[in-house]
Length: 333
Image (tube, rainbow, N blue to C red; front, side, top):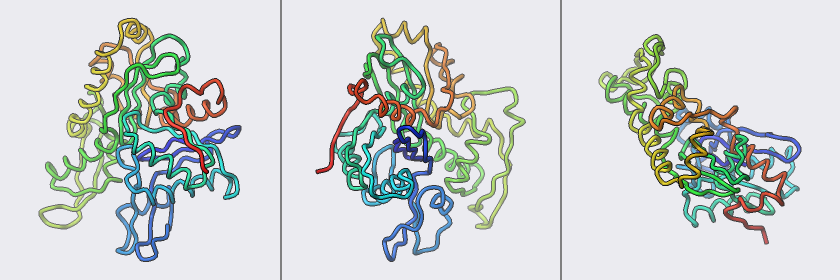
């Protein structure tokens, strides 16, 4: 399971990826009962009446609301079991490498409460590298940059372990937040996080290209001065400029990791290049930006969004030989 800030993906041994849903839960505030989980709940974000709240139980890659996270996990496990609550599965969960011991414990407890028989934790960069097909079991250096919704994970891996790693809580959410702030500051337009995400996907970029000025988008929101709905047209370069601060933070994390990398592994990375994974890898030009700033060829994984969950699935299917990759484990009493 890839328990992400933005999306949760579930891999079942022998079946492959059986579930990919937004990490969102809609709750009735009066009865405290869940109304929807996943994609149906995401549709309600910013559009709920007063007694219904749609929220994301994870923030910056860690559990922010334990009870809601447990509800979400329980529902996703039920769906993965094809509607059955009888089977208590063994769970391998990918989590950010920079989380604290308390945050790791919270993930394990939530998963056990949700119906898992055993819970094994694996750091997301290791899972992403395995899912992307990097030779993490060999005595050679591989570098992975996993840009998720809540965190960016940068790691140099060798022999099924992380040699150097850095986790920064700047990722896709912060890129969207910077667009929200920009629209408010420059265009006096208030927009929601769903609209900001659409802007990021449609016109956002990390590095200039000749066709940037031709990429435009009409954005609807609430005008701050008049208080009325308004439509404005935006262009690619201004959105790239609005995201420059969080993007530079991500690039600096990559540089810091490279500076701390042992020379022998650094030469392997120069030969093999840097691998990008996570939803943030879909941002246009992010590979060119990192390559330009580091001088190292940067590749994007074949399917960046599924790298972590595919990695957890490969570990699950080769459990005995991959035992060293786990960063935590617990079982129900």
